[in-house]
Image (cartoon, rainbow, N blue to C red):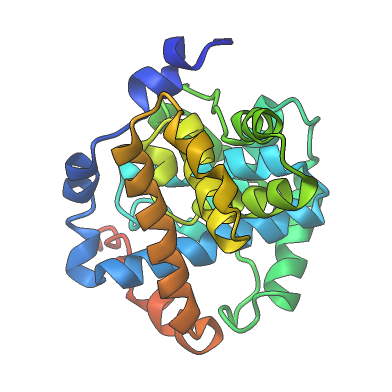
Length: 267
């Protein structure tokens, strides 16, 4: 396992170029606008969050599962695997990699069934359609697509160090931490190193809490501030999109627009 981000597969293989990312999405963007595409990913990040909380997973495990989910679709169309199958598969794999302990397959399926019925009934009229064999088969496909690069560096640890260095109180850490969680609903985890994401989330939190005294501290950081500002813009754009989105009214229509795999030819 790489203890150093710069020597890790995350740094060397999974910091992607924005143009490459858009090019990979072109087929999906024939059926969906960019806003609709992002809304679908916000929805499934919420699904992963709810499933993770119901399984009593740590936030680190939920975040890693969300990154796996985004990495898969960074290189694949939405039609390759139903996102509703991939979401619990990412949770299963992340719980193993983050050494959370094994989630029993029957418990995972049971939580998926109850969450779809109670938390996401506004999105799905049918029951959760998948069983253990589907998830285990999907896990092999996911591993192959991730190229077995399973160690994900998250912004949480650098964030803790930054807040400590800044000498600020818990309120700032709590808000920054929530913004890091929200950033998983954007592409920043695919495009930027985690320490830059941590700085951007901290900067947004300082603006919200009107901590003008921190401006000098940010100015003295040895970091590419242009990149940090790009991350800030991506997260602010997320909040703009979120503010006006009536998820419960729109999501069924959006899910119906997701490209579907072609059925095999009839013999």
